[in-house]
Image 1 (cartoon, helix red, strand yellow):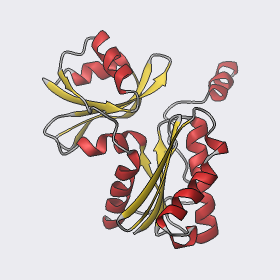
Image 2 (cartoon, rainbow, N blue to C red):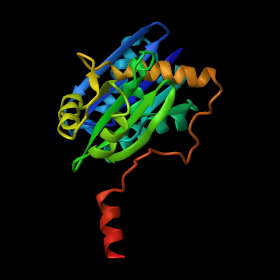
Image 3 (tube, helix red, strand yellow):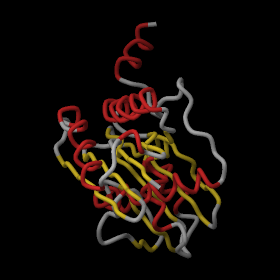
Length: 225
């Protein structure tokens, strides 16, 4: 299949294209400068695998949780391709993407993304069941669920910080973690093609990111009301 993936849930931007078995991924660890780079990055990876945007079978994007600005940017770029070419767009949980390579291991998998303000976006899966659904959690709540297990696999985009804070907040389970972060684009292609095979529908025009947390503007508005 011919496809394009954009992971812009956090400050590291990953743009990847695949043409059947050939794949090119570009990683930009550039902080908040994603908007200056993303369109050129899309053109670059498509050219490298020898396809055009009109040839894409599907596109996929991190659906959240993550950065408000980054998520909106990824959706905007890929929805433009949907509008121009009718390309189906699929959104995937940012947490599921990072947990995906480890879900077949015989261990519970805890995935975390730093949500700042002493909180983490997190998901905990064990034996194919969701113990802790995607959410915006205090560390104590994550530790309480994780301590149900003697051993646990911990992953995510901010893994070193996450592991340190879990330990400081009383995590008792023996922890296993990846030596290096897996490339999210590979997981995105695998997950999306499973979604397609399972008959899941792409995003509708009105579908957008899942933020899990109100923006600062929304918080201030609620405080005034």
